[in-house]
Length: 490
Image (cartoon, rainbow, N blue to C red; front, side, top):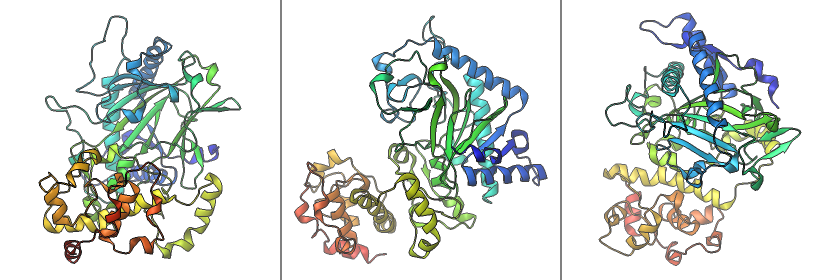
């Protein structure tokens, strides 16, 4: 393990990280520097709270242990929800994922009931106060990162919830009270996603290390076990020697997007020592500062501050779309000197040693054709299609694949005018290219970049068995005169 680097993980006092009017103090500048250096090297840092706040967090953990300990050994069917099946901004209350040996109680102001559901079941105590404390802390951390990037003060206010929430508003941010590996929680015998080795339990399989889609996450746990991958690709145990008034802070994928890849998200895994010896399992409080669902992640603030913004970050990304879409992490190399997912030929020489080391560590294989197609489709959408739409003042609103199967055969369908205006290829459903079947992706790519298949040494045989053809015979000829005229606009 990477416990060797733990002593270098940055520790910052919360009181030193609070910005004040006027010139920044030396303590503030030093704290910001320590925080951001730790985030750059380890994708995590340690926040030291005042004594009173530390007591609040510890009492919250104690309440969490009691709450999960009194839960039934196996949850009711309607409370079993794998994370990927739940709407990201509507999680509230208790739910469980037996496959990951995890139970969670989500506290979301505006949605979570403050009163107990029944006289026999009381939620963990003090959640409203803990939510307020960690929410303010996360915003202070976000402002400190903005200061370090030379952005204007509070640049992300537009995508954050109101403080306080207005009438009938529901919080986008959430406080998750979790319990991993409670011995009395049954059902784990019937799954194979976790593994035990030499008394350690790995919660996530090797190929599924999660990344929070938050802007900032803060976690306080009662037992060590959270590992985060550092800039060298090594796993660092980040909560191994936390003091009673300390918590771990790390950036999420939304901040990576909003800062054009300048702030790397934390790739995590959880390992628990001697799980059967822990009566209550491993309990934690995790606050996730999330962007509002009806906003977009864009890099306008980065441009205004003079930062370069690469092509993949040029277009605003709707938050709802961002949260619901999967994000491959096998190309997440952006550690300080690696600012983006993709590398140009000029960079290849300097990256050989890093690439070779990562291949040895994780036994990476060349990208499969389907993944190459997905990345190429996303690139062409951003570099070609969006330029045409922007020039014509068109806002792209994609259909779902199922509903658009009939649209492509109708001249008066809801998306017909938009498809015509931007030169969308004939026979290809008007859905986000990421979601198109492989053959349809090739038709899309050929329409906007004629000869793409020959250039990239791909052909239509890439379609998987059972995938719909979607009139693929016409895809290669889908570049109409209107397509060519639209491309000449750029």
